[in-house]
Length: 353
Image (cartoon, rainbow, N blue to C red):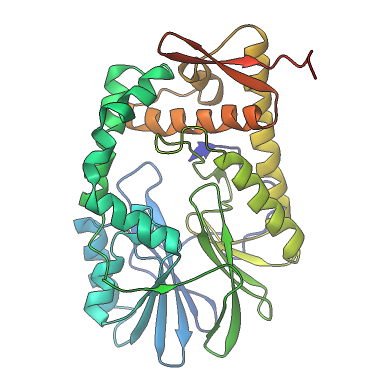
C-alpha cells in the first residue's frame, strides 16, 4: 500500500479511536467491528459482523498466524461468546482477509461467500506455489531493473502465501457485481471493484447508507495497485481509477464507509477524488522523469517511494511503479523500448499521429 497524506479535513470519523485487539464496537445495531493483528507495518485488519436471521455473518477472516488465531479464540471466549456464526464472507484473496476463512468455515460449519476471482486465485496459488520461482518470473523483474536480491524475495511469495492462508472449503457461494443479499432484514447490493485485486467484493446497503468498502478506499493510504509477472502489460491502475469513479457516480455523498483497515469514515466521494488525484500526480512524476531520458522501473521507484525499502517492500513498490508506467503506455503517453534484455520507458513519439 502506497503512502498518501494525512486524512483530509473533509472526512468525518464517527469512531475517532478504533477498538483495541480484544474489544468490539457496535457500528450500528446488528453490525459489529473488531480488529485482528497483522505482522506488518500496517498492523491490523478490520473485521465486521452482520447480524442475520439465522446467525452472524463474519466479513473477512484475518491472516493465518498464531497471534490472529489466538485473538479470534479470545473473542469467541469473550465479547462474541455464544454468537452463532452462519456465514463467512471474504472481500478478496489477500492473506490478511482470507487467511483464516477456511478455519472459520470448518469451525462453525459455515459456507464461504466470495468472488470467483478471490476463490480461484487462492486455490491456484495453493496448487502451484512454485510458479513464482520460474525462470521467466525472475526474468520479468530483472528485465525491469530489479536487482537479484529483490527478485529472489518476490519469487518466494507463493510459499509465504501458503504459510498465511488455511485451505479453503471445497465449495463456495459466488458473489457477483449486482447480486442482492438480504442480511438481517436489510437489502445489500454486491459492488465489485478492481485494481487492488480483481473483483474485490463490497456490500452496499441503501436504506442504512452503509458501504463495506474493503481495501478499495482507505483514509490515509492507497491500496497497493500492482502489475505482476503473469500479466506484464496489465493496467490495474486503469481498473482502479475506473472503480473509484463508479463509487463516485453510483453512491450517495452521505454513505458511511467501513474499510478493511483504519477507521470508518464519512466522505467517500472526497476520498475517492483525492485518490484519483494522488495517482494522477504519480503518473505525472513518471512522465516528467521520462522526458529527461529513458527509464526502467527500477529507476522510477525512488520517485514514488522516497523512504528506504526493505526487499519485501521493494517488491510491492516495484509492482506499483510498473502499474503507473503501464497506465501511461495505455494512454499513449509512454512507450516501451528494449535494450538487450532490459525494458525501458520512453515518452511516446506522437509526430506520426
